[in-house]
Length: 119
Image (cartoon, rainbow, N blue to C red; front, side, top):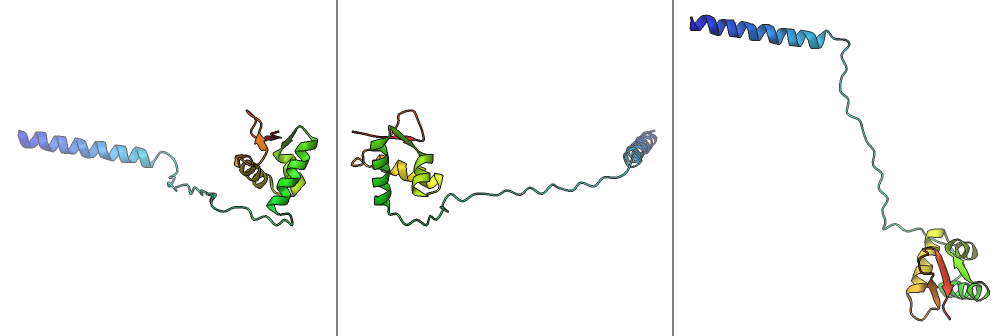
């Protein structure tokens, strides 16, 4: 009696597995899984733009001070056009000028890219 139950259980498992496999294989064309290749491009912050200019940093500072004496304020874009520097380099240089205590160029409070002449 126990042998019959074991054989009946084994036979039913074989039939169930066979129908599950048959159902999966006969349900349309086979699609193979191909993993998607993702390309990640990282920008290295250590690499900086090289700038070729004939003006020294001191000359550019004097130009900025002279401009601010005639005008109320100066944006990074105006400084970039005036000196020929790229906008990112011009912004970094103006920020460096404003951090020096001896320089009269200071950022306008609440404005990121606007500077004025502290009297």
